[in-house]
Image (cartoon, rainbow, N blue to C red; front, side, top):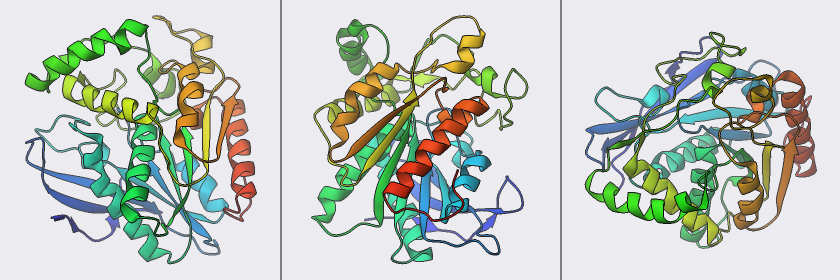
Length: 336
């Protein structure tokens, strides 16, 4: 039985034009006190037409701050909402392990609540689910479970857009086999133990304090990333395995990714023109497991978050997204 309570809309850290709503989800199944999630909305401005809505879900070491993305959808008639999942971003609380869940399905609670809010605010209008990286794994799994639980009953969610979804563990095959099995055993007894991970330069390539153009809260999205814990990684690997067996998300899907991966211990110009986090070949390989109509679009020179790429790449991504939305009858504004 759901124990969640829903608060009231109030001011958001993004300032004028944005509001937030807190979901109090009750005791954490993973034992870290009470948990909350936070839904953010871009308020509908005077003269804007609403023909549907968007629910955006972030990735690991991330939260919603991408107002350019929100404006893109709003210009196309899609009211924009974003969800900061439990222990993430606006929903992070003192004493909790950032982003930690022992099962990705635990976040179904806030995803369901968010869709209920969108459906109530915009009755009978379609909802487009948009997700990035780890969120791009979580949301298809949620949609598959939701479709089966509804037994064929219609859902407000009518389309799925994935931005560099995390569909497999990058690295050598041994890491996806024996190493994964070993970590699963250790993770059962030490779920909060963190793994030593190399500190990359993705964060500094994005932030204004480094070589990037984006300003975001470094306590919610630290440049070096949050520690990767065994319990969380095991949850992700179980999610990968479920995806690889094949899902049916029940809606048409668009998968946007970079055209190349570039791993390097040092920052170069190539770091700004490739995915430095995930192996894009894995994204291409496993996208067919979403079920139904799936369109996969590589974006030349895109970063891991294609909508935080250099201008020429992200404009190309917006153009391809706009065309896909048009082809599926979603949105009717000015376009990208």
